[in-house]
Image 1 (cartoon, rainbow, N blue to C red):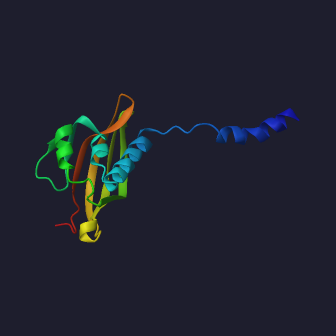
Image 2 (cartoon, rainbow, N blue to C red):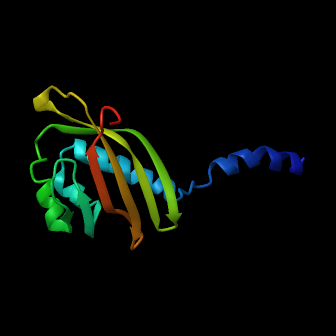
Image 3 (cartoon, one colour):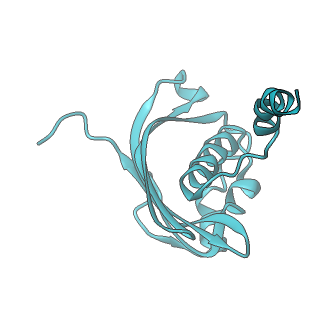
Length: 148
């Protein structure tokens, strides 16, 4: 009877084991958190998702924003703006246990413009520092309507 009882309990034990995410899942979770934080218009929380030495090539900026203060300046008008972001599609490439590249498409929308989607594309280098996943590099640009 004991072998049968053990077999019956095995599925219960396996379902109670903790799930461990890998680098790809952790990076994707950070990208999702970035979109949610942007959509919440929380510029300070958004800046904290970047490493102190991060580089941001923002969608609407003609310059590189490098480091916390310049990234904070780039997002200074986000608070209370009603701007939203939604990830549409992404691909994730694990470089190693502490570095992941995620690239894809997302839509920006502004309440002041009737929430019309503004298709854009992005690439992020996400790194693990001191046990925390953060954005080290972020490039964003408008998505071309057609190939030229």
